[in-house]
Image (cartoon, rainbow, N blue to C red; front, side, top):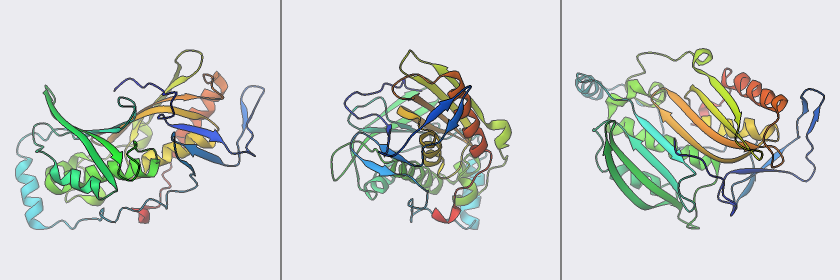
Length: 289
């Protein structure tokens, strides 16, 4: 993953207390939750209270028509590479960077760029590079109305699901390699991921002012928004982040802090326990997608 760097100018992800919010750590970490959190992504203040605001009209379950299944099976005669979609908020201070990899099977992704424009976004820069894992398509994206990077977690999730949806449409063989293939693809994943086994969370100090949070878990629609809400609900600030979709898994790295300091051990435990609890008990309203 790209190293996460918090931006003092406000381009990083950040959560701040609402005026009436209070959080108290007692004794060995008994934590009183603030009643509500306000999300600040540099320029935008909004409250996250549910995932119901996320509406992706273009993402609809696809029927397994015979032609698509036949094409997917034919493509599957070769080893299908692992699809990777990265949402990077760290490497460019002025734009959200999206990187898509699917071996050497991806073209110019013009349809994907058009789909992103339909979300009210501009692709201000695009490039391609090759390495041993295949061809990497990278886009630098800004909001069309402001020219600024994307800071709304619901819109970031919409970007992620839109890119995956286009991959499923034009490369149906990817369906069996993606968690979203069960809902939006022509072929469901051949192997299901046990969320209890797949979920790994670690937190370590990253200097005196922040901690580094790693999360790996089974992917599902709405996960990015879900993680943001869980973290902010216990008064922890996310200073920067990267969200990677790798096949059936989601891999996340956040720099986090509590009142501009690294998380103390009891709060690290509270955060890890909260994430494990919610990640193992999905509650996202599927009708939202």
